Image: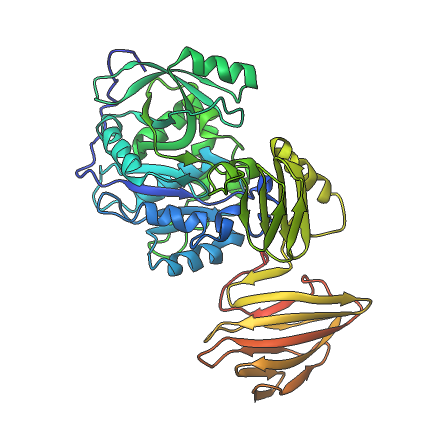
Length: 493
């Protein structure tokens, strides 16, 4: 962007200043394993015993008069986690865009811009879009909102605005933005260059030199501006996205065509556009922002005791300082720990010096090479109808606890390799098994023979809980043939 002036792209200006959030809710968050996993990533977790998940906090951040209903880009597997969160905070999305596979931020922004343009009321409208990841924390909402308002005039005149976070330490986990001279819009600076994540010495030099900010990965732009810049600098991205969205339904989830979308380059918006465009500008903001991208980052934004320990769950420490200790299961007791991370879930424990906790992603890469599923799922697995939890696994048998929400049903299904025994421990269950229908109450049971067509439904007002005992030669979750499914999951589950 020229130092003295913003270039106008001579495109229609949105008629109102309402900002349309585009929430990027894909990703697996491997740096927060074992809490974050592929099928249940960090944005859907309640970290530190919080009341809301990171995604729910993001939804609430944009629940104000200056913001429209959000459009949410997520993966097909995460659709029902997103819908559960919307229900939890009593909000409605404008549209859900369900990516058939992950392709980074540039394609996600292109999909969002195309869908929002398709939804505009009048030809020539140009929605103003605020693209933000679903897994960031913002502690000072007033400062964040004020920064967005400062950015609106620049975005309406054809700029792509990014938000530079005022740094408070020489952080090596963030990219940096070096600011240029102010533009004609108050509070908006030009961009001289983007800087990759630096080492410690370079990060300190950047802070000492002044004029550098952390790259938040949050952007404000008009839909037509972003698409035009993608056409200019990364044309394969909008081409693939347009092909994948050849038909956009007027309502309901938008599901890009898998084959067309798979041809899209896997590229971030920084590499695709921001490092090349003449229309990039920056609004500095100090809003208590963190991308909570590591356990060390979680420690930095967590309440601490007088010894600098941040703890969550049942934890007992003696002579310890500067630690992040969190448990979702057993008691963690420690003596003489200093600057460590210890995170325990019911099926895994991660331990590391705090300054090396980012290497957990390398551990996850090693886990993927093994037969374990610990990189992908928790012991308790969420489904759109409820949850199931593995209680025991042995040779030719498995025991699970299954919870079905009131009014919900599992799919009509059958298994080739296992039979099942169901015992109701709470609530009421309606069971279909071949041509028979029975209703079971607490302490009653039934048997599902191998190959039988069956379905479980909760007709009651309280959760239905059953213990399921599986027996057979193969007990994997992929031995499910769905004949009917209320949730239209297809193969992704």
